[in-house]
Image (cartoon, rainbow, N blue to C red):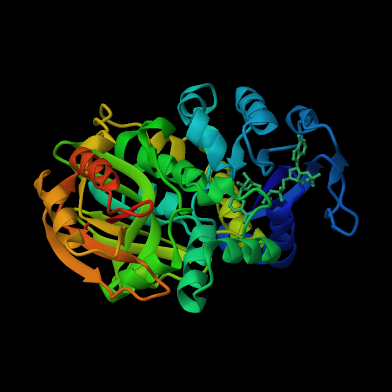
Amino acid sequence: MTEIKLGIAGLGTVAQGVLALIRRNGALMAQRSGVTLRVVRIASRREKPGVDLMGAQFSTDLDDLVSDPDVDVILELIGGEGVALDLIRRALASNTPVVTANKAVLAAHGNELMSGPGKQQLRFEASVAGAIPIIQGMSGGLAANRLDSLFGIINGTCNYIFGEMESNGTPFDEVLAEAQRLGYAEADPSFDIDGVDAAHKLTILLALGFTGEYDLSAVHIEGIRHVTVADIQFAKELGYKIKHLGIIQNTAAGVEARVHCALVPSNALLANVNGVMNAVQIISDGAGETLFSGPGAGGEATASAVLSDALALGKQFSTGNGIGVDTQASETTQAPSPAILPMAEVTSANYLRIPTLDQPGVFAQVTQALSEFSISIDAAIQHEASASQPVVDIVLLTNNVVESAMNAALERLQGLDIVAADIVRLRVAPAL
Ligand SMILES: NC(=O)c1ccc[n+]([C@@H]2O[C@H](COP(=O)([O-])OP(=O)(O)OC[C@H]3O[C@@H](n4cnc5c(N)ncnc54)[C@H](OP(=O)(O)O)[C@@H]3O)[C@@H](O)[C@H]2O)c1
């Protein structure tokens, strides 16, 4: 039996989940893995009355985690880039392995952390999609494959909001307020609903499976604020659901990396991932289509992934290999990084909702404007105007169009006198 002495940074949702899981399943973990996890030290901003620290020493100084020779592995469960980055750097420099759930720090500093001293001692299963073992799945289970594409519902807040808008017809602002009340959305929700959180996670998946580079700037980022209940209903009429997706595609022209709303066929697996659940679908040359799904957040769900990393490190200790032989970090090193395809060159079909004045000839003006950019229409919906609804939505699905042409056409359409308000444009997901 190998004993791993843990030092935990932070005492919030995930750290408390870690303590709860070790308390409940510690013996089971030891029996199955041959590794006993013992929490010897916790450092956080303040102690929490009522939280059982399991006999660990508490301090408010994060340095204590690095300087304590008793700590074998540090769990960084603070988040953000400031003190968390500093702690990870110092721990790795002093040869102490780190397990982190922190996607923000990896998206911004992954290249440095994976190439500096102690690079092979950083594990991060919990940083993407909470409980889902997607990092081990990609770097281990699918290691023999060339990955062709990845589609992920990797932000539970966005997925919850769309689900509520769809099932209850509740407007975005009201659903968001309710999500905040229930704890599904932060007081400042912008990280989630503007797509930044999903982009952090996609950056990690991009590095791990496709490019070997942690480059947040390579990811095109859009959020969900512009989507209305009307769009969700029109999409349904056309046979689709609207999801906020992370998409990576290996194409002949380069690698696409983007997070944005997308229309997904209603019968696709990802269309039926509901509420705060996450899912990642990967298409690879040998394994074909694989789907990983599960809770993307929550104290114990995230702790499950954190502790899988701690146990993996413990198993390395026990085989006498020491730390740093068979890790996630070492598996990201590969051949020269393939080029990222600029967003302007990405091709997709598009959903357009064009609010127009109720006048004769409007539809013809819209189709004429699109044809100037060689864009054709695959499907259309136009409901009748009513006295209470003088503005009529024309809803279109276009053929596959390169992004630069679509953007130019949108500018032209928006300038037409008959267009009464902002056009909503959503991309259709590539074949799923
Ligand atoms: N929550 C989830 O479901 C989830 C899922 C996946 C990944 N993650 C990631 O897991 C990490 C932790 O998330 P969380 O939800 O547990 O966050 P949290 O509940 O806000 O906990 C963060 C902890 O760090 C402490 N802390 C903050 N700044 C500090 C500082 N300067 N010095 C010392 N301690 C400090 C906080 O102290 P106070 O107690 O005083 O606030 C708190 O105990 C983040 O990287 C997050 O992205 C979370």
